[in-house]
Image (cartoon, rainbow, N blue to C red; front, side):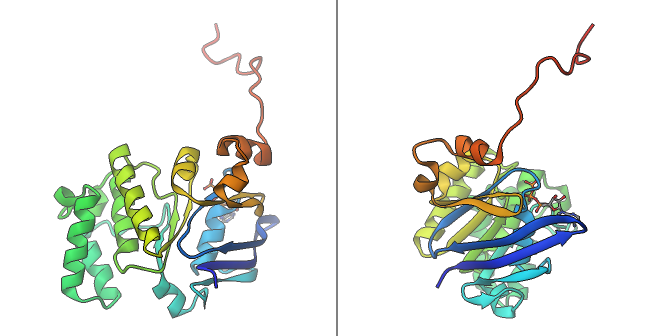
Length: 249
Ligand SMILES: Nc1ncnc2c1ncn2[C@@H]1O[C@H](COP(=O)(O)OP(=O)(O)OP(=O)(O)O)[C@@H](O)[C@H]1O
């Protein structure tokens, strides 16, 4: 059984096929990177996987539980880039709220919150409104919220974009340690160095489909992930004869 299995997921917006009969198998204990160009369908795929967006066809299973079921929601921790946040809760209150929602024992929530806030450099901001957090601080408190209940699978949409290098290193260590203990991380990112340094598996999504996937070294075949990305996703050459108006006289 896979930690996350996606079969035939499809989503259209009008005439645009955002996700096109997409299949993916993500093994337990892996740190799985999903990469692809802007508009490739990464976020749409992840929102369907976690039950936020209803697919037109296909389904997914999280730790063996079909998407949308209570069991699937219990099994996952979720960080969605751009999702609304509780601006009028402090970081500590947000974690308390999530703990209560998950019926966690109060002392567990206290202890885990303390550890998470401290590790993520948010201890001093624990009593500050999330609405007053910077973009990176918001990412980190959402990550703390995703991991608080020790889920089987963490689904993280662009978790480290806007996070400073010190915190990013700490988060990566946290994710590695979580995966080494059997947890599964599925993350999307545009930072190829991050994916190369952190993930053991990768899938490149292009035009709503998986262009290539597998263990990182098999996908890379001795090349950099950026080269593989450009190979599959293509890239326009910059034409120096254009933009003549840019600082032109
Ligand atoms: N709610 C929506 N209504 C209409 N079109 C949408 C909607 N959500 C996504 N799309 C379209 O679906 C396609 C896939 O978008 P998606 O956000 O999944 O891409 P992505 O790979 O996450 O991109 P990025 O790397 O820029 O975050 C895009 O063409 C986008 O315009």
